[in-house]
Length: 361
Ligand code: ATP
Image (cartoon, rainbow, N blue to C red; front, top):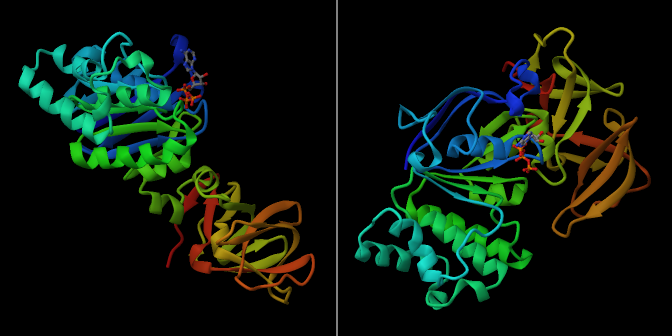
C-alpha cells in the first residue's frame, strides 16, 4: 500500500485544456494517507470516475503529477502502478471456479502456491464465499459474482491501493447494508489503502474514515463524516450531506448578527470583514433550528408540512420565498400554520460565495 499525492492534477477530455473552468477535473493537490479508507462522494458527472481513472492510470492527465510514496508514477501503465480496481459490474471468469477466480490475480504474478491458497482462504472467509470456492462462477447470482469481484480486488496484499467504482450498484438493496459493513471490516483486517467512489452518502459515510466530496470537477471538502456534518466548508457539502440537507438562506451579515427576511438572529462569532460584493448566506442544519410558537424576536415562518421520520419530526416551512427545514421538539404541538424559529447560534455558519467564512471569537 502507498501514500498517494496528487500534485496540481487536472484533466480535460478531448485534449481541450485551454480553460481550466471547463475541465472534468479542475486542478487539485491533495494527499491520500497510506492505509486510509476514503470515499469519493458527489453527484453524477462531478468527476469522481475521472479522478479514480487518473489514479489507476486508465486515463492520462492533461496536467500535473501523481506520486506513490513520493515516486512520480504519472507515466506508468495501470499494470505497473500495482493498483487493484473493482468496477460497478462483476469482472470475473465464468468458466473458472470461485476459488480460481480469487486466485487469478496472484497466480498471474507468480505468487507461490502455498501463499495463494492461504490468501484465497482468508479472503473467501471474510466475504462468506468459503462454501462456494469449488463452484463454477457462472451459476452464481449477480450479488455473489460481485462479491468475487470484490475478493479479486482485495486478494493481493502488495497493491499500492484498491479502487472501488460504485461497487454495490448491482447488489440487492437488502444485502447492501451487510456488504458495506463488511468492506469496512475488510479494510481493518487487510490494512490496505482504499478509495471508494459513490454518489450515495450512506455508502460513503459508513465505509470511509475520510470522505472527499466533489462538486463540478473540484474537491470541495475532505474530512470525517462528523466534520462534514458539523462544519461544511462549502454550501454544496451542507446541502448534499444530511437528510434533510442544510438550510442555506440569503442574509445580510455584520458583526455578530445576521438579518434574514427582516429578522435578526444572533451569531456566536463576529463577521466584520466579509468580501465585498460576495453572495452572503447563512447555513444551518435542520437539527439545530427548532420550531416554536410565534413570538416577538423569533424569525417567523409559514409551516407547509411536517415530515415524521419516526425518531424525529421536521417541519417544512417557508421564510418569505425561501424553503426551510426545522426540527419539531418532542411533544410540541404546532398551534397553526405560523411558527417562530429558534436557532442554536453555535451551529449557524456564514458562507461567502458558497465558501465557509470563519468568524472571529
Ligand atoms: P457518474 O457517477 O455519472 O459516473 P462521475 O462523477 O464519475 O459521474 P465522470 O464520469 O468523471 O463523473 O465525468 C465527469 C465529466 O467528464 C462529465 O461531464 C462527463 O460527461 C465527462 N466525461 C467522462 N468521461 C468522458 C469521456 N470519455 N469523454 C468525454 N467526456 C467525458
